[in-house]
Length: 258
Image (cartoon, rainbow, N blue to C red; front, side, top):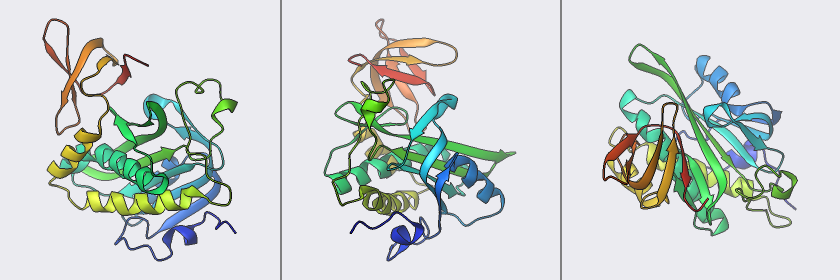
């Protein structure tokens, strides 16, 4: 009999110190990010998870919608990092997601800069980090993670070419295995802060972007060339055709073969 996704199924016997020790589960919710933000403003403990069985108004980067019908992973993690740790949060969340997919499904996931999780070049997940600041102090951060586990890709023509799903085997809900592993991996990486050198190196090594011909689109410009390198702030350096290195702090990157 398949164990149902619930706060109990995710926390029972979990060996983390704080990530995932408190899970607030909603069978259906507009946005885990919004709910986690409310809990953070109320002072909930670090590592609190908001998890939705179905997310009806999920958010991606740049105010895009994120599809999360029943059967998929949609969660947000409440964090209280030091300001020096902010650049590493997207790295930690990305690495936790790929490691969880590796362990639960035996598939080698990769990261496309800045926040996409890929399998065989197709998107299976995404990361969203939101921070609330006061002066130069971090009030809280929310790390949102979405993973396509049992998504019927064919039902959504707008993503049919670019997305992929794990598709749970009959009688087994991969979400429980993936989420529990994600909690463990996230905490293992998060406690390395504020020294994020190991996190940065591991993230860099999982980037599928480096060495590829790319087009980066930001609010101000479009940069095309070869993805040369990244730095510890998470910025991407693109080598243009004339040899000039251009630093891209945020934006969308398209690989040439996409």
